[in-house]
Image (cartoon, rainbow, N blue to C red; front, side):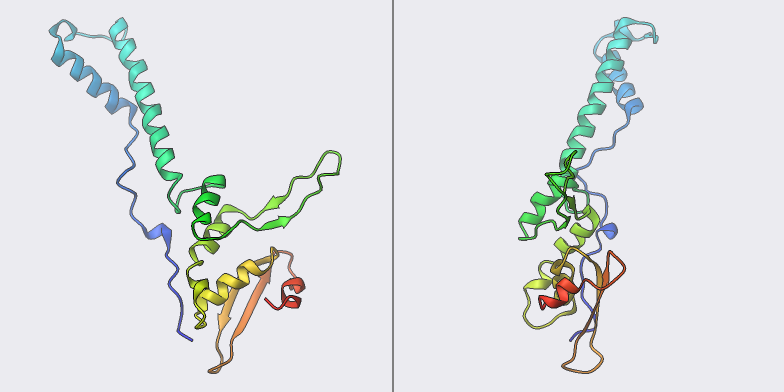
Length: 185
């Protein structure tokens, strides 16, 4: 078994080029300059002018549109996606979010299921390709351990001697998730 595995560290990636800086003041300044360049009648605009107010509104809506585009771009990136967006990205890897607690739909009021958090889910998703190997890489053991039971919070792998693998799991509850052990996962 190798010395380790190389699940990508998304925090080390540079900011995506597709994201545009959201800067209201710069946008307003650019719009004012463009208006002045197109019509010399607007060369002495003051903040109380109706044209100035219209440009303030336009700059504000431009800022909102840029932020909306940035949010949409982030929603399809594994490093930034959240909630259902992350679920859809993970579907490409054939990984689904774990149900930590099934809840109780018959309770009054009904108790909703508790689902795996985004960061834990993202980690498992990024390990999915490690899990495809049958040659025993560390990442495969970690991937399968993390997905074996909703109570598994973390896992580590050691090979004290050749041919022997020790997988250690940390439970979300503080004790061993015996259901995973009993299922032979």
